[in-house]
Image 1 (cartoon, rainbow, N blue to C red):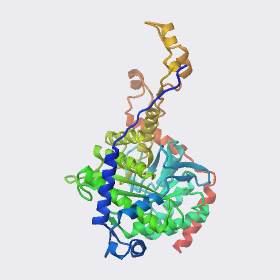
Image 2 (cartoon, rainbow, N blue to C red; image 1 turned 90 degrees about the vertical axis):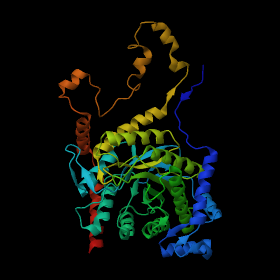
Image 3 (tube, rainbow, N blue to C red; image 1 turned 180 degrees about the vertical axis):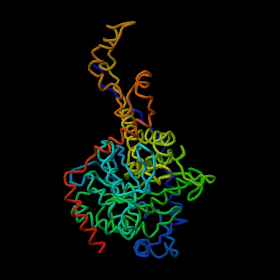
Length: 475
């Protein structure tokens, strides 16, 4: 009997020579141009490790040997747990993990499409929605809660995240002064955050080549508390980075290696994952957008992280479109397909639209369906004697039917993709249903899913405890 042979698609972008070339470009930028570090305490740490000669006022130059040391010091894997301490998944393996987020200002109603300022109820509903959908492995900060006192927005938003799911969290805190308070809140509710980490704080530098004080100070706090962190940059090619993809890739990679080196100087062996959101800037419309070249840069970054033996945090293809529409689908499909066929990582920001200012629950549900299909594609198929069913073909012969063939009866429920959202209607059945648009069907399905999504069984206990904590902070 022939041994099972799986047919699986895989996408590779860079040659080994190109990987070395990108690394060389990044090291040149770090050793010659340097990066600006705005945090005085962090500059003092760097001065002790690199020597005074590496600093010109706020500009820090990183020698290649120190970057190499940092690459060797950082762990290749990060194990994440759910907030109840059960193993969730490992970052740095070959799998691709998705999540919903990120810090939007408005919420788009799934039925009417109307926009509303992002509120606590929206955070509650969206965290529960993401928690109910199996292909989302993490919940990222969905929006900035605006129906509470502004100084308490991050605390209330973070509380809603924790109590409405047990999945791992990617945390973004908009008010830099509240970062420690949010971690204190989580420790108050969950105990030691470092023992079985379910929390991944997310930090961005400011391109080009600025390690702003808020980013590196918060990163230092998280690392000193023993938390794994995400360090990811955000380009606007043609504005904050060069318009050429090679220039953007070199500059962003230099920033990532600078962030990595800083993290290891803060604490050798600190778990960190690196990534980039490589968008372009439309100088006529004055908006940012994902170009097909952005997708290539995401894949290039993923392959660089494999080379470095580091976990990768990439783009989700989010922010485009005017909701869950054809424009958004264009980028989401490109990103999901290509990223799924690459070396894996974390894509934590599904759901935002209209330039990342608005959160669309319909997009969350639609992309969940997309992830389902891309995983089916990446899983491939078996090519062997058993699955070729040659004897069956021979028995049925020319002009026959496979409707009742043994292979059909055995596999008809799993042999092709059944959409939970969109029914496969004939023209007549669609007309009888009132000729609904796909967008209408998606919105109604999403609204029903939101209404059914529930909180974990410890919601009341944790919410009451968290509300008391925030009340003390506010007093």
